[in-house]
Amino acid sequence: MRDKSIVIIGAGMGGLSAGIHGQANGYRTSIYEAHTVPGGQAATWTRKGYSFDGCIHHLFGCRPGSRLNELWHELGVMPRELVATQECVAVMGTDGRLFVDYYDLERLRQHTVELAPADRRATDAYVEEIRRCARHDFFGEMIFGSKAKLLGMLPTLVALCPSFTSTMADLGARFSDPLLRDGLPLTLYSAPANPAILHLVMHAYGMNGDIAWPVGGATTLARSMAERYRILGGELHLGRRVKEILTRDGKATGIRLADGSVVESDLVVSNADGRSTIMDLLGGRFVDDRIRAYCGRNPASDETNWAVHVFLGVNRDLSKEPSSLVMLLDPPVDIAGHTCRSLEMQIYGMDPTMAPPGKGVIKVELFSRWSLWEELARDPERYREEKERAADKVIGVLERRWPGLRNDVEVVDVPTLITWKRFMGGDRGFVNMPTKTPSMLRSLLSSRLDSRLPGLAGFHLVGSWATSGGALFLNALSGRRVVQDICRADGRTFVAAKRRQ
Ligand SMILES: Cc1cc2nc3c(=O)[nH]c(=O)nc-3n(C[C@H](O)[C@H](O)[C@H](O)COP(=O)(O)OP(=O)(O)OC[C@H]3O[C@@H](n4cnc5c(N)ncnc54)[C@H](O)[C@@H]3O)c2cc1C
Image (cartoon, rainbow, N blue to C red; front, side, top):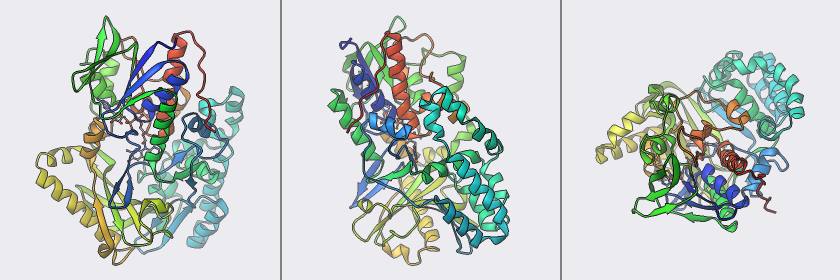
């Protein structure tokens, strides 16, 4: 079977994982990646001695022995140097008070009660819900667990039922103190409509040590996977953009690269953005109503969080700062076409490799619209000016916490959705999900991905399009699942890639 070949388009989490598992199962694989570095959205880059990470807030699967940790072991991502942060996120009120959502539950309880004594009951209930979530490795068991394990989680799930239907806004509304009432809803990526259960589970994972920061940032994960892939005999071709997926009689037969060269293969797996894969690389020939609807445009997705990042390399020690901070703003500030009532940022003081000694990095994440930046990008001068204006306003706001910060700023970098599109080839930056209701639960439980196209054999999609999920482990898992599918179709028993010691 060694002679069966798979060509993989893209070296993101899904593509690298498909390559590693493909190699481990006796297929001859090669990955063609448009960018000059592997990793896709898992990107970290350097500017004048500072490292800027465009990706990781929470890396799941860091606790030795956990199910997700095992997934990373197979891919060569673990073991690695990790830093556990003390808090999930902190919130600074307009009066300067700070709420720290400590992972440690006793510390969290004490701190919250001191901050808001009248909210003792709401605090106790919040802490208790996290404690319940911490009893199980929910994601790991849903992916790899036995039926008995899943059944064992039922009582906890029943007890947590109200949190499944409530939002982060509902969670905040239980508190009377304005800092908690207004701040707590923003602690899950500044999106009060997000389900509260996700925050509770995330907090529980952090408390159990399953979430940590990988020293050096997201790129280090991708590099480890690329190295593992090469060690297993895979061929990784960087700086090679794929222009077309070749088909014959309803079967994928290979790819044509931007330089015109052709690579033939038995199977093709695409980790590239689904819409571009289906409509451009395959010319829209393999669609039905469902896929056509997926490829449609949800007008609501024009505006997104993380559309613009303002990275600052500052001549200031930030090692005592929380790793993640939301600042509440009153009055609001207009930045990048969005009225900001709060600003969310990551502060990398926990990782000395991210900045020269004694200095620090702040990443501020902004909501903005794809259409705004698409229009601005037609005029490079206006595009540049708007980025500078956004950075200037952000620095002005940050002065409220760090007076004099403006004078300490040594490097500014402002990637937008246009930057993501340039480097990743998606049709709207990284917002490349299909138009369907994303369901983390479905992505976790379903062993079948949305990885096939009607009328096309020998072809699979991996990554964000197939999972509709924005998580590193989930998209890495999609590569594993596709190789499982391929093995099944070939009548072979899937073998997990061996752990790296
Ligand atoms: C701002 C941000 C923050 C995030 N934070 C977290 C977090 O805290 N925790 C977490 O778990 N996840 C996080 N994620 C999500 C996570 O990074 C993604 O879910 C994951 O990296 C996506 O992997 P993927 O398999 O979909 O591949 P992608 O990363 O989408 O990679 C696809 C690859 O295909 C390549 N490609 C595209 N077109 C072509 C072509 N024509 N030819 C050749 N190559 C091509 C691209 O260059 C790219 O390398 C974050 C994402 C973003 C953007």
